[in-house]
Picture 1 (cartoon, one colour):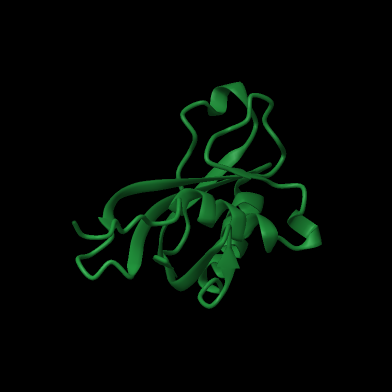
Picture 2 (picture 1 turned 90 degrees about the horizontal axis):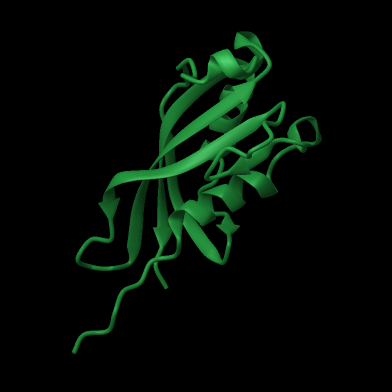
Length: 136
């Protein structure tokens, strides 16, 4: 029987990588895989999306994500999402949640109004992203 190739939990790796690298300006941001019951002024939801996975050689997990960023208004949400995108692009060569990040990529952020916006006063910007995470 072949040895099992089990990747790291890619969503946890991404959430940890972003959380650990936030500057003081954004240190209060909520970064998670879900929206908290009590909304925060700055929030990032990172969700792994379909596709990618571990190829036959088993050395890398190619993970795809949607990264959503909320802030007080459109200019603040765009600025915040641009910063999170820049942070994302800086992740290759870093460790997070016990995993080594080999590669990162993200698209430009764009406005994507929240369907629940009538219940809160926040703007949402988002982008799609990728990480290649070393499989031990």
